Every structure is written in C-alpha cells, then in structure tokens.
Image (tube, rainbow, N blue to C red):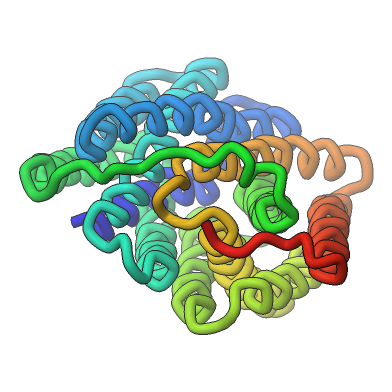
Length: 367
C-alpha cells in the first residue's frame, strides 16, 4: 500500500513534463514562465515537508497521507475546471504541498513497519517511485491539459482506500530529531547529492521538455519519460546493493554527462541515449544520497534531518526549472546543460569536506 502511494506521488510530479508543450501553446508563454510553473510544485513541497514532519511526530503517518491526498485532489481540480497560467501555477503549488506530505508520510510509514534495514527498504520505495514515474508520463501523454489531471484524480481517489487501510495497521513510531546531525559532513554530502538530483530533474521536466517538443509529439515525449522512469527504477534498486557514497558518485557522474548531452542536440537518437543515462543517474544518485543520510543520522532521530533534506530537494527542484528556463532563453537549449554543472560543484565540495573529516578522524558514524 505504501509503495502504491509512493507511485502516486511520483506520478503527480512526473506527469507534467508531457503536458508542458500543451500548456505553453494554450497560454502563449515561453521557457521561463513554464519554468515558473514547474517550480511552483517545488515551492509547495517546501511548505509541505515541515508540516508533514510535524504531523508524523504528533500523529499517525496515515493522517499525514490523508491530508496530502486531499490537497492533490484540489490541485487536480484546478487543471480540470480552471484555465490560464496563474490558475495552473496555484494548482501546482497546492499539489506540491500534498506531494511533500505524501513523501514524508510514505517514508515514516515504512519506518513504522521496517525500522531495521531501512536503507534497503527505502531504496525499494525509490524503485516503486519509478512506477509512478512511468505512470505519470503515460497520464501526461493522454493529450491536452484536462485529461491527464482527470486520470490522476481518479488514481488519487483509489489512494484514499490505501490510506484508510493503513490507518489501523500499526502504531506510530517513537521518532525524534538530532539537530547536531545537520552540521556533519555526512549530512552535507547527502544534501549535495540530492541538490544535484533535483536541479537536473527540474530542468529535465521543465525547459528540456520544451526542447523535446520541437521534434516530438506529446505522446512521444510521454514515451521518452516513461523510458527514463523504467531505467531510474532499476538503477535505484541496484543502488541499494552498493555503498551509498559509491552509488552517489556514480549517479552524479552520469547526470553531469547526460543533461548537457540532451540539451546540446536536436537528434532524437542522441536523446534516447541521454535519457538512459539520466534515468541511471537519477536512480543511483538519489539512492546514494538517501543512504548517506541514513548512515549519518540513524532511524530513531531522523525526523528533522529528513525534513531538511527533503526541503533541500525541493529547493533544487525549484531552482532547476527557473535556471534552466532562463539559460535556455539566454543561450538557447544548450544552456539547460549548465544546470548540472551547478550541482556538480556542490557535490565536489561536499565530497572534499567528507574526505577532510575522515583524514582528521572527525567523521561521525551512524547515530
């Protein structure tokens, strides 16, 4: 049930990419306003994460999930019955708040049931998110603006049944926070890794989708993103079998190559190669960043660290589409590739901090 809710969450954010060209045509806007639309979802997540974190500390994770689904319904209705870019931005912002609640609710729902072996279980959740990553673009490929969100609304209704079953299935876990963990090199590395992932993902789902729209139909763009999600799921699952720092380093390298490659060309065959590399990079880097976070903080006192780490993801997903859209308007589509370089710099600095801490013996182990 939790895996299904995770897939629903992923579908909610990944469905927008194939719809982006249709929204641009209907509203007559270019890459920068579309970047703002995609970023509004991340802005909502920044609000949703701390609200959900407080909810799981006070109540059952299922209560957080129920509120999150209600917000998703409101957002879907904005696209179904509303029109115009301001309405769409507001609807995506509301859905972003709901998505923040879904992620936190799913994570702590897993921790309620599987406090041991959390890394392997949560990388399994990331793999399940890839199922939503397949479903989302497939929904987006239905055509137009209203149809994809109407289909997502139906799936959200089904998700409510899963939440009702979860509500009585287990007691809330005794979890807390460890503020000192936020100052460790390990947390900095986990945060840098998720910044790289979210920057690239935001650019990928916003301005890069417009670039794909110059050669592909809405259904073809949807198929492209479905393929990426399939690779992402396999990569995230495989990442759980390796040391987190190795998975993070490998994923980061793939992203630093793949995003500029996709942005610099208009050749469909090259796009296919880049999509495969992006999927592998997203899965490995996100699994690795999550593993570093768990190793640094531990499960029992992870609430604050998970909320802050998730907010950092949201900041990257907020900045990625805006930066990518602005760079695309200033430099052409190839400018979108610069976004990955920003994340690469952050990750390299964080790895350097970890190596310095290891040499001096100041790197803390798991809580």
